[in-house]
Image (tube, rainbow, N blue to C red):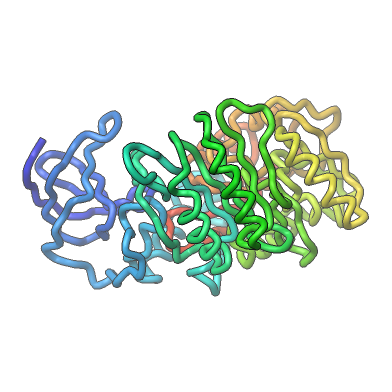
Length: 420
């Protein structure tokens, strides 16, 4: 569209890109910071109504800019805050919580909290990557911002060290044999890293042999591959996620399912949820329970707990985690968006995916519990759902932002609401 245009970065986007005001209009640019003056080249449409480029020259750098330790920052889509000072990253993430609360009932009186981690590199205990095999060696890594294109990644500084080393060795061994496209899920298992691969494309027999060898050699403690429309995955070793729960005991999960990435911040998250839900002696309904990260803490004190989880493997893991601790709860394998509770609980706790919980919010409104504790990894969908609850008679009383994903643009939020 244009060979060259200058502009000023006026803000961050929700994805951590710079929002650059130019004579062409607003352009989204990874790798730049608010207040910087930049020269942009190769500006192109990227999605409906969006102009984008990752090619820029700094004309007037920000004093909040710092040297990133990662060579692919800005290109892999993972850590846009790595170029920003800790002070600027903190302000960006706390501002997201303020944006969620702005204009809602009781805004001024809402008690706010912030949880920052000690560990900001080498913290991630799980990751999802992708591969694409065209001509020559496949690209293996993370998807670029606003794109399906994959940035080749040989090491990842935010991965826990053992997981990063296993990724590097697995990548080198698997690369020559991967066909078509697919995803790789990395997580920690009972005795070491676990790797799960999934692809709609058939994979060569040699790939199965490589995975078997990685487990036999102790690089991985478990591996799984589902490819070419197979209904059952081929497995080696123990391809299950096992991490430390917030109570210090092992928490079994599903590698390709959801769990929190930062153990330190997750402990704080579970503690805050229990504090706000106050389950002692109360009837609790938990929606989107997953493998039981919150369930085990709520069940330890609740009078009764019903946990709803749509994924059968995650629901089974949740039951297993409860049994291992001698805790009682009813775990239903059902869709939290359409679940009909036969009774009104004292509090509903929900931790939906990034898309939020539009169906579940409608159910909660009809159910009418006195309190709701909402855990979210996406401020815009959290805001949307809170607006519906507030319109139906609830108001926020407490809100906490947690830096679950240092170096990234993501922030975890917990909001407690009470009926007015």
